[in-house]
Amino acid sequence: MDKLNFLVGVVGAGSMGGAIASGLVASGAADPSGVMAADPSEASRAALDELGIRTFADAAEMVSAGPDVVVLAVTPQILPGVLAGLAALLAERPALSLAAGVPLATLEAALPTSRVVRVMPNLPVKVLSGATAICAGSRATAADVERARGIFGALGSARVMREDQLDAEGAVVSCGPAYIALFADILTRAAVEHGMACADAREMVLSTMRGVATQLLESGEHPRAYMDKVTSPGGTTAAGLRALEPDLFLAVEDAVDAALRRTDELAGK
Image (cartoon, rainbow, N blue to C red):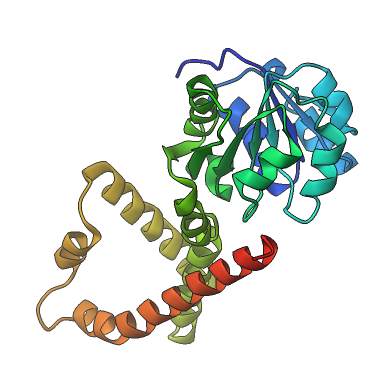
């Protein structure tokens, strides 16, 4: 993998921001000297300090230190205050916002001299298997988009999308790790109810999920075709799928709809 030839600064080193900063180093895309991060939490900074990443308690101090790209990894609720404090310092620089439901128009109004890009990653970026949607603002250049692709492509899959697609991507992909973890927990509990040891069931379920994802990604096969390989006529899998699919489909649709409603609420729609 080619190393990034620019300095990345991450504002907010919580679960997502910390995963981005540490993931860039773990992937080999950046040396520790090529990443910096700011967070008021001493514990969050300490975890990155151990990797050799330069950290700051104050975001303005970090931005003043000269990162070429600034990743704004803060929640929508605190983003307005962060933008107000950094707007002048981010002039003529690309700013990548991770805030769900905050549109480009709002970001560009708050950062009138910055080149804004919206990015919607998910937590598996920490293990270099994330998925990120990227959308350029009106002032962002092709080079800014490529830098965003370089950062998040090092952490998994990164795709450029239209802004009207981002909310759906967030409700499915950004929320997806929690949905999938819930499904793993439910399968594990079902196994325990029928006599398996919890630790054995959890390990085998998670190994199976990893294997299915790997096979589907590597083969490019449609999930339905993969299901056919596992499902014999009149067999146990066919019976299980017949019971599971209708309710599961409705539950997933309800979950995505609920996440989209909350996205609209956060955006003040």
